Image 1: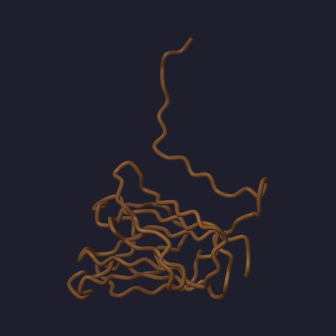
Image 2: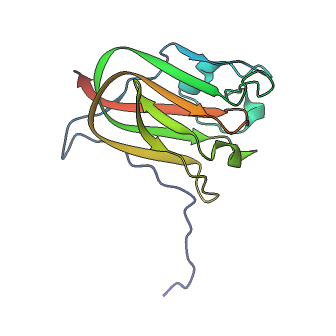
Length: 158
């Protein structure tokens, strides 16, 4: 009998289609915009499919807090109306607490407020078949908004 234990930092489970509809990331490689850009943190980095959440990997968005007037924002245009089942946001590893208080929207409807949790990198936001064409994140704390990956899971067009 072994007395060793195994620890998991994080386990991601996404739709498989076995008990419900197959889910697809409809944000992947779609056009993004953000309020400002600093340190090369282009808005499109959040939908490139790369889950490396270290800023130095060149995979993280970054707004300019000196120009945002405490109103940083980012959004992805889903290029059509979709049934959205879940939004998953990968937070930046360094300066992770900056995401605290970020608000998540589908179109103009608020669906979630992120409460920083030092034990997780991913924030999972289940939705009940929300219809929308754009997913956005706002941050009004005066901190820069940095997102590593935003995954929008959908069962298809609305």
